[in-house]
Image (cartoon, rainbow, N blue to C red; front, top):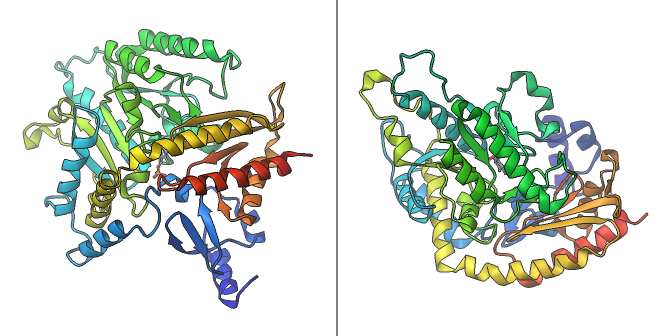
Length: 459
Ligand SMILES: *Cc1c(COP(=O)(O)O)cnc(C)c1O
């Protein structure tokens, strides 16, 4: 069904729009699905067809679309002011939100620096960590002293698409082309990663990865400013769930070797893992906490990098000492974004979102157990309301499907026909619904996926 209006939109899209992470030659040949409206956990296209938003509009939506409280908060803020700068001025919502964030964040994170997206939230943490050590070294004149200028990150990591965040990232297809422009970092193995040198012998993976991490720290700690990690769950790597206490051990070793810890909770933050922040699962207090995706409930581009008094104090000095943090985006602390974020956080409390999430998490794990019996399901991973279903050609040998088979893509396109929007990561089907999804909707979502895997992967 193609309306005249739809045809018009499609024509302009194909003529002028360049889509992210998309092979445009292929896009130009397909009929795009164009979303016009949203309603709760559903997206509605220009033909009036309704789809369950199983990907939370790319991992951002929290309480559903057109959530009254967030809509109203933004509208009310529009009636006051939509933007005013934080350079040399304050604005009301950014102040109130900072206070709220500090209250709910892991202990010790008392300073909030705003930006617009996950990549910049990470860039800011990297720059702050680097500058912290640069300014902290008491004997700055002693040139011979080894400086802490390097970072350690993990295999399979994804921290964003800007150059700094790509440098600490590791997913080949994303960063391969730009490698000559990236700064070198130390790479440690994230447990169960796709590069696993011990071939995913799961129990030993945890021990081997920590050992590998410790060895790098022991050898190079004098040069390492900070370690950056996606706590508990690596998202873009294919929903890789770290073993129990891996994060805690990483934190312990960082502390022991005087290395700062940057927790990139851009994806895991704001409830998706079952707690407000993934770090809470293991009582880990990072030196930096990066938030974006879900912070406004999936409404507006806003991000925050939280840090401690210790870091903040190293940036204090006389104006002429040039110790200030030289960073700031034009829309930093945007009042509309901050108003949306405040409303988003208030809903967590008012609706007891996290308590209500627990039965959904339990249901999801029960439903996922059934997937393990499917002939082409090689692995199922879950933390909270995030899950990944890895499809393999051969279950016994774990032989993967070839990239050109696009099995994940195929399953997701088929799911669309049944009214579900999901997006894969390679051969992994990603389950990332809004926290507001009902148990009935979750059941329906998993049912559609089950059947689509059954038929798409069956030869
Ligand atoms: C999405 C993501 C980012 C990048 O966020 P953008 O808003 O797309 O720049 C960084 N880190 C993690 C863990 C992410 O999932």
